[in-house]
Image 1 (cartoon, helix red, strand yellow):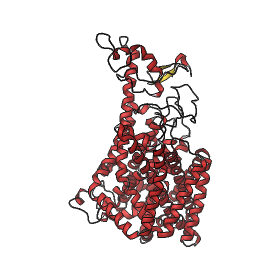
Image 2: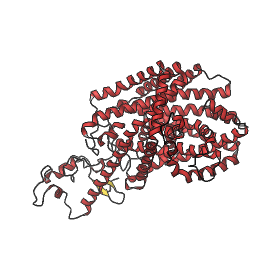
Image 3: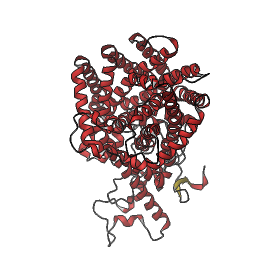
Image 4: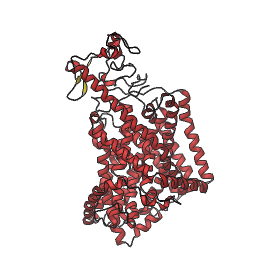
Length: 621
């Protein structure tokens, strides 16, 4: 089926509430062959169980193999991950500054389903919340001794180097990579009527014979990456939450406490998933935002305020000055020969690994972002997903990271020692040093760890449910089952091998981003092709209306007025339009965008050349 085709709505889809061509109905997409659906539902769980058994039976061999793969990826492909990130930047730049930025997800009259505050809260909660809580202090301190990296210019001091690199790793580029994947899924789903799956956003770029098997493989990769990513994150979240509780209660972080935390967080996530986005995920995300503001304000007001302000201004300027050179940094001086281990490469520790992390988590992060973004223009969508979260990241890292560096220096590097033992301990060690409100902030941070993980798992569950159940709509109980399935995987990994096994599986999952990145590149080019084709159709429509000498039937006849072989008869042009066919195509096989279709059952649609969008005839609203 051509990329611009609009499959008919399934019987269970919601009917359009407005006229066709004004607000696109919510399609469920094409049906999936039963054998393909069975493979997608059955094979990923089998592969996940096999992987877990392999890692638990032979943990050392699995760890060595994962380390070997990481060395190979780091040694020969650093340039590729830099190029991948730059392609995502180029795509989002084109979407923002070209005419396609005016395209509205869901149709010209579609309205956003969530307020800006709720939307940004959910973006941040599913995208980076829990990871940023700990790495905003751990990464600046861990990078403090590494100021010799010449890519940072402008007189930045040793502490600033770590903060600037943390801006880069968690800020604009990372969010652009999420946004590029999300807009591909969103346009495919909301405007082309396809299911919210990677398969539907990717495969029509490929030859027809390869689309079906490629679609199955793509969907399996997305399901496995999402499941293992959420399960391993769940395991680490349990340990991090336990560290937070231990920091102000005196309890010992132990397996019993880990499993209790998993049970509690799993139950909260199940309730949220059952209640739906509006009553569950959105409300918890808004709570996250309020608690995050409280934590930041507390650290800023009661912490080293002057030092924080000075660091913010200095690092913001350094980041702006060095962004381009950091974006192209491959560590070429370390590529003169093969690496003995990935630990010999700075990029292997940081940029390459973090970009792999972003790619591996893209299926559920981008899938959920696409789901909640109907009604926004592509331009506002891309800017909203990239600029606003990036600024939040920079403020968060600037305040938390600067406070961490300040107290680490004055405590004889006590925070550095805590991070060396456990990266999640740095935040709690720093908050404990803040006068007056330190204990209160410890409680707030611990609650934030819980709520941010609930929202991360909740958003991942929604995306996973779409991948598994498409084209049917998943129900609340199915999402609850997925939550407890993911929690079970986390419990098994922790109970058998502890943090070492969880770390091995998570690293393996992240390295799976290498092959999956090729799928995402195909998706990028497919979106570019789809939007270019859409612009071409709009120009054809404009010419048909503006040029008095243009006759659509001329495309179907030769210079003698005889029908061209392989094209529809001129008298069938009107019928072709009513059936959704493109009257300007020589083959007549390419279907026009849904918003330009004629439906004989409803009022005709005019074209508004000021807004470059359809409008009802007769001035109807």
